[in-house]
Length: 230
Image (cartoon, rainbow, N blue to C red):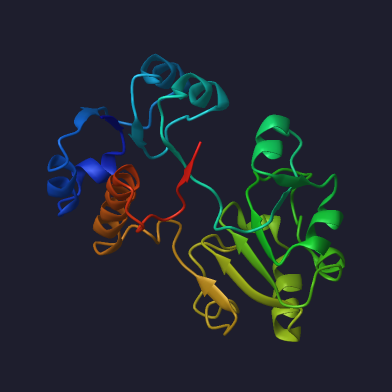
């Protein structure tokens, strides 16, 4: 069993995950990621599993990695809807993802809206009052992209009114935020730093969870999070 290990936080963080991985008898190839697509294409096809971070795992990489690669992750068992100018038809069909042509159509159908877009003139204030009014009551909004994708006064008003049930973000319109920023103490808002996941406690847990997913999936054990067979 050959494993490609590229994530540097995994490799550099002390913890029990190292001993667990070594105890499996895997042939482990280590590189310092994130790796570009060109390097991933050189490596793909020679490994049964990836323990990776921000490497460019593109469709071309996955195509070359198959059929040897054993695992790919899915999104929490949810019914997934999406909107993007660049639409991967084959991927959406295989997994399946419902495509929307407009943000208005998308926001009216979902219970959780997660934003993944760059900031431009066309995406600024993508989420604003008129579109929030189309949403199901209690919509949950997650913004880990750019603060200005959301019109902040409209979001605060929607939280106050209960139209939006919760707003989670690691980006704010003022950074660092002033002490009286209305979201900091809002009961329906969850605010973290942009690197909020990188605590002394969480990084070893993330590494151990990744290792358990790999080991348990390959051994047929049930304790696996978001793993499915190709």
